[in-house]
Image (cartoon, rainbow, N blue to C red; front, side, top):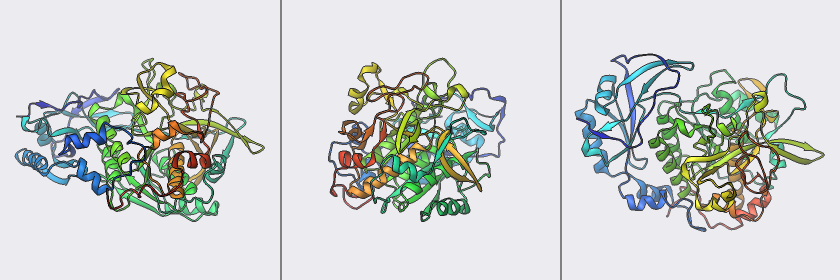
Length: 525
């Protein structure tokens, strides 16, 4: 009988869920079982060190796998457990440390010691579990997480459509215009780079991409869909839904780094789908992303500890191969939309192995940009997320910048750019033109900037985020405004982080010149 509780797997009921009822016995459930690394001491050098020492060359994906992979013996132990439990082994991926199992609802519930219910919420019907997951004692040290038993929506998009009619004065920008405002490196196009986008639903239409890029007189970039856990490029026809997110991400990244390949990883909006999409992108030896952009997330309090740990480890693996992960900081101000009266930050932006991306409101007058913290909470139009993590402690590279706030948690965001829908981005979604904002736009903008800097310098840095904090220049500080919990000021603040980029200066201050780092996924160590 299973009798070991998986640490960090405890989960509360879905808030506001109604009409709990048993699952249909014939329902098939697919779960991702995450395993320990075969060499924990070696892996901990990836997971616990944080950004690697200055100047360290990125590992190849093969070298990374050799360090963090699960052992065949551990995978076989999980397979044996599956067979005795009446479950089917769908996939074993040692590099990603995952074994995927499937089975009928009764068999899965018995195998993992859980009671699953179907419940009704405002977003539809979902499968939920409460309490912890258990596994047999012989797997106690082998299994570090079990995902997919519960399929509630894990994350939300972080984009906002400009209301109609727009507030006055309202302006909007093309992505190339913002590339000029933020002084993207001259002549850099992202050639030789691959921007990985994580998408948890929706899709894009080829006709929209053609219309958008033709309108900008920019060659349409190569966009490649990658399905994860049954996810696929599936446009819904609703710009207010995930299609808006997908198109905003592709169009911003593609317009600012038009020669980069854009790999779009589509997965279900569950903790399982989110994690599997990220680990797939990190270990993808076919498309080999060189930077990753994520515009989805949710309050730290809505995540299980096992999911936060697994996601943070995946980001640490990305850092080790020189792949930066840019994550939107959220659009609901300093509470992150939680109504308990406390301040919250969004995850995965709060991971110390991610680059948290906050938002500003931008007005360009006579060629000169003026920016304040994005905050339209009074008109229910959103505001940039930002604050301090209650999960992750302050990283060493951030401690000096955040010291005056006297918090012990990781500070969010690290960087920022335009996010206000009233000063938003011109996009094409589902055949129509819109103006979108939100920190969702900032993550792909920064991913494109990083791709361009990597191309221009020939370097892929394993310590990028720490270099950003020690850079001599490269940012325009944002000192006006607040996000409903904190106010901006000189230097880093929990509204817009270090500020908005001055790309050409950032290139020299952070990347320098030369070709010290080989591209992620290249041969060697």
